[in-house]
Length: 580
Ligand code: FES
Image (cartoon, rainbow, N blue to C red; front, side, top):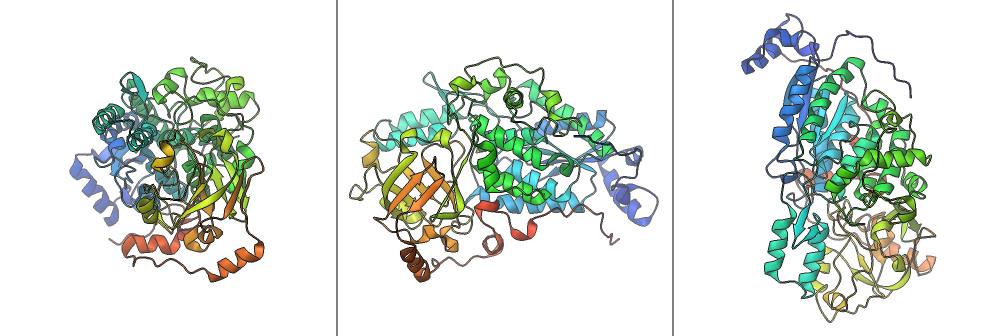
């Protein structure tokens, strides 16, 4: 793709705040000088905001305060003025009821910071699951030149000689405790082995997936996604990105130049190849909605369908992000896609050049981590989009995390009306369930939970686990952690709380899952379904206040990205009016 840099020098937006001798400019500039900034730093050079999602309550991002110093150095070196801005940090491991409810709040807050404060370009410093999409959504809405710097994954975890993956082993260990195969003491020891360095989850969970999506979209420099948080090369990446954003501002290279439909198609294919998180579906749809790209759920199925999963990382495979980095990281995967004719290699990136130019010389240093196609984990690794009378607007399933023998399945529904009902009954040995049943969980969608918690991979009943069975078909309108696994149908839309057909599934109904045919069917007649839907009453909800009220009023379906409707679209970053 051709990109024509702007003619430089030109007046930047921050000169509205800092340039000249008007009262407003003296006011803004004078206040900034209380930080000891020399006058010549306001001479029209780019002001770059390091939008930092650092927080000690977002442990995955707790090292970003340090990493920001390297970004700052790079900005200075390239002739910009760096300013660090604390950005809303939606912590996956800490926020209740679920960080996802706050992704849109974070995106809204960051967007208004970008629009209302003096900055010409942004470095998006991200790590934990929701921080990357919220920053990208804000950048897409304002269209200010922006570049992603990821915090990087944690080092490998090890427990008694075995690799331990963030999240993935949490599910495994907690089910082992439930099944009586692991002591609580051993569980605590394992927990301590899991998170042994700064950084984000070390599996191909949502954080690593979204870092990979940022790179595949072209919004980060090549190689950004996989460098471990504590590796010195992560710091080099931060410094180089600081240098690069200054030139991007000079060239007026904006998110809308980079995040085109081709770029999203590249990201979708990359997600299939890495065995990425189903959460990427929702986040990419939301980002596309902000930048004005017409991306749909069907694009996910169409683009990902024939892409094999070749990255042998947990939860689908064996290794962790540290090994992915040593093998060559995402550039190797993108090169493989390019060689297979599955990559738009002319898509522009923040480097200022086409993505293909950065891939021609990369090599795979470990074919057991980045597999040859004939050894792919799954031949068709893309996210599957299911439709049918149970999911008229779509539902998703990740084949690389599912059990092959369950991909064609018909079973009796065991229904839980909401997450509290599930928690109250799942451990009851009198629950009428066997391994051929289909567990159905309602009212956990964007409105229902609210925020669409990661409870879709609901744990199996202990009496099934004790038989040595580790997977059953599960269906819900919830999400699933990117570190989780199982034959799990997620994001069923419309959701139950909005009156979707999921709301009227009853215990004992038969449900057909046909992954090859992309079908999810409730085996009752159309007349019966219509009758049940006519009788349906919304669940009695709690009285929301504050942001929870705003969220529930305006959140849209998972099938379009679960954004707040009024935040969709690109509103730009006009300088606005000054009141001083
Ligand atoms: Fe933050 Fe996984 S919980 S990256």
